[in-house]
Amino acid sequence: MVHVAYSQDTVFKDVGCTRQLFVDDDVIAAVKNVTRRQHRPAKHPANPVIVRDRPWEFSTYFRTSTFNVLHDPRAGLFKCWYEDFYSYFGSPKHKPGLDSRIMYAQSEDGLHWEKPPLGMHSIDGRDTNVVVDYSPDAMASCATVLLDVAESDPARRFKMIYSRRERTDMGFRGAGLFMNYSEDGIDWTPDERNPIYEHWDDDVEIVTYDAIDKKYVLWGRYGGHPARSLHPSFDPWFAPVWPAKPDGTWGTCRRIYRLESPDCREWSDGELIFDPGEFDNLDDGHYGFVPWCAGEMHLGILNVLHQVDNTMDMYLLHSRDGIDWRRFLEHRPINRARRTGKL
Image (cartoon, rainbow, N blue to C red):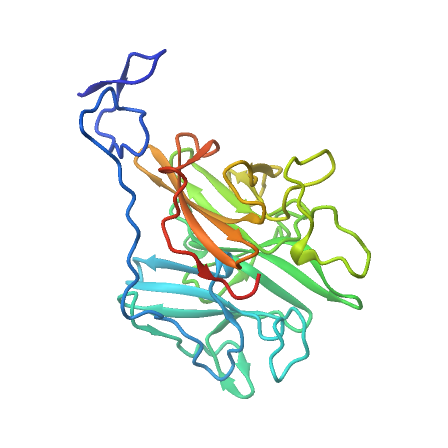
């Protein structure tokens, strides 16, 4: 048993056999000639490892919640689900719209990927790797996939949560947050309780399982839009910013809410967790957040969009309760900003 100085109001903390990361000062009593350093991850020389290379792919999107990579120990494979906005950005064969499909790829080593024909959805007479396609009446947008370690039903090992949009005479409208489940991540069944969250109309959602607190947590860019105007010249991509955040306005349309659930079906109301503030620039928006548990700590990656430069940075965050988060080491990003393409 190891006892270390803990805080001003608690003299000792029994850490037992729990791994300690020393990301914060929680279990540090004193140090001498010790520093922390944040290292940048190095990109593999084989990048990009997944590319648009099929005739039915048009605008494959690998950003925020439009792609997921998980390792399935049962199959011994890395599995990837990614989105193709085949008309959103205007393909030669389709009128501009919001149509998209969810596609699947797999790999034995995470470097060499294949897109197997699945016999589920054909396009122009070709068998494809499409696993979810509700067009032309609806779309499963920005899906987030979870391999659920807490699930006892093997048919529900994989869970996919997505923003469903349905076509109307005026275009697409948000129909809420929906969930599909699957045993293998390929053959998906809609949950009988859909929608699992009715008042949802956004394009970033990331579902995780908190193994410390034994609950499902959804992180989403949710909550409406800043000072939206019906004036035809209003640009929703570059809305005005009020840094002081007076009542009735936001500083940015991109901020992140947290929802939690005991069963991945019944969800709490969204709680605002990440809102650009004093450590952000005027044009910064908080785009997406991916957390995980490490020992007794919560760690996470926050994506911050620099709108003027159209680049995205990633910041390492840490937390003791999964709600109150702090950026690591002087708010320095762990990556070098790259152009994101579309906003």
